[in-house]
Length: 378
Image (cartoon, rainbow, N blue to C red; front, side, top):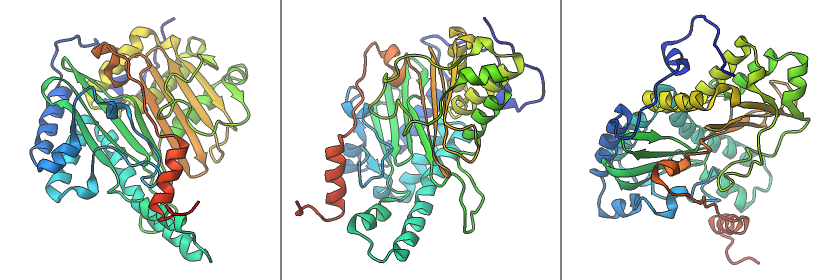
């Protein structure tokens, strides 16, 4: 059952995303693909020999599907760290981010990276208040740093299929280019603090609408719809299909979108556009077209936890061509992930299935002890 949208004023960007688009086919050359390749080549041109070895990999390298949202003390991101770049290279990296993301997407990713410095200050303040701060606590505080993000390029930009990723604590974005098409999933974004509580940036928020979009849709449901959509009183610990846990969902759950009114359906589209719209404009429009082709009525919306803006809750939008998860980790900390169940890492385009890699908890614990200088302890 197709879902129609209500008329009304909306931004040009949102209007473009919410309009049914004609998907581009293989062989079409997108603006996104061209500018992304140009920006990637500009970054590569600034690298010396050792930096190139740390950045450039074959498209088939398993590091392309190995990423984490954990702090660097727990998992070191693969690729060239921002801390090992000079100013020219950092400027080129941000040029690649802007070429791959919309203005809102770039603002979110760059803001998340800067939040690491805020987290560092907050962690140091907590250590100063602690009477006996542990070596591990100090090592964690030191690991929060906007420079602890890494970039890696897979394949040769502008020559055949290729991809790139940026990964670090609270931001990991994976891009694939194939025959002019661009994929941007999986993408993980989180913010901690969700809203800065003190200092010169008090009140600012890096992911300002992700939680609100879910709350708005839930509030618009009638009692019977809410009863169907809310499937648990407690939220899960985190997003379920996080790094290394793809395809871990058994199926759809909650309220199917073909039961929504036109106004409710508009709110669902606004929610989806908040996430898909982080990608550069024609990448985003094509993904919205894939969702449209699969059928907006085939999406499912589910909620776990309290319907409380100040509480800890989780929601999911899930369908054949989109998976969105939002987890309010605590009152001032959230995680999100976006996946395309059919085309993460461009695997549908490339004709291969990728296995995600993530370190085991034993490896994570060993990394933490090593960073804290506790290697010799039992």
